[in-house]
Length: 211
Length: 226
Image (cartoon, rainbow over the protein chains, first blue to last red):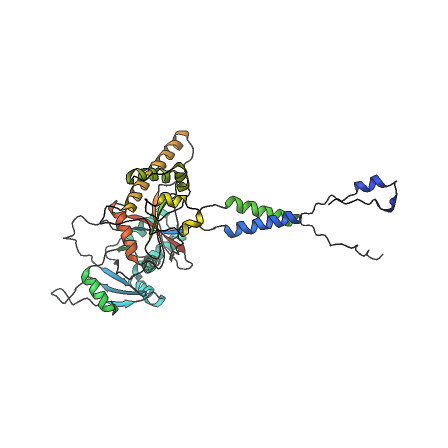
């Protein structure tokens, strides 16, 4: 669309001067439109956070199943459907015997007042000790290698509880991750995923009430 | 002297700073953008306080809500190498073009016999691809393709890693890549037994260490010296 530049009423004398005064401004609107379009596109497609992950080591199955020493100070969580958790402490007994009474399953749930509180109580000693270590470390009273070693030693302490996580067919992945997460929050040193045994499963089904 | 009334026409505004900024941002987002093809499934992993980044070099097994298993290798060289070996093992023919397409695929969940057909399909067709039952991992019939994928893929990934490391050491360049790791990405609602099957498949190959992928959760203090 050509436009005829009207030289105006100045006549021939000022003609050349006027042409020089022509605006050098370029209409930037289309360019800006495009820039913002691209900007919007890239902003919307951008992924900022890399996915996070949780490192977990599963137990190596033992070569010999028998003669496994029973785990001392064990707490076993049995996970089932509907976000329910049952637990028992110590060894499992399907029925009363010479060593002790039949195992009774207790129920917990994923709320702050249940599982979290339970673990906090159970793990109070270690929690406070590790917290003290952390305080010292943060106040620079301790070298970081010493700190790491002490925390590791503390976590591997024989007297502390070992947590076993077992699931039935109805438990979801989220439940498992939540339990592990809760154990991590409460600075539990030893936990492991284990396959459920038949007597435990029977008791869990009975406790959960529905098959 | 009174102000001259402005002449007709739109008031002009100096847009230069705005344009500068817009282009700066465009450049930033363009350079940081990483393009990849759509995953065959979207899984919504549970949240955790885990703060470990997913390693760049990984072999990932994705499990969706229904227990379908998808397999992927992050390194494209290792991916094509693994495909060639799998093709030889299962006697499936792949054209050069299919192999090339495979190298761009983040993950897949089809039987290797259907894989050529899957690769020929367009990206839109792939979402509706049938049968997409996940990588077969039957333990009874000798058709545990997932196990073979993991074994071969893992080996290739390590080979590629070692080759790159050796090359970097030779030329004295800095080498930043990490050893390949095994990652499991699983939807929140998936029943744990499906995960157990995958873990036992890994266990058959004497692999016990995993990175479980989770989304980030706020709150909670962790004392984790490692």
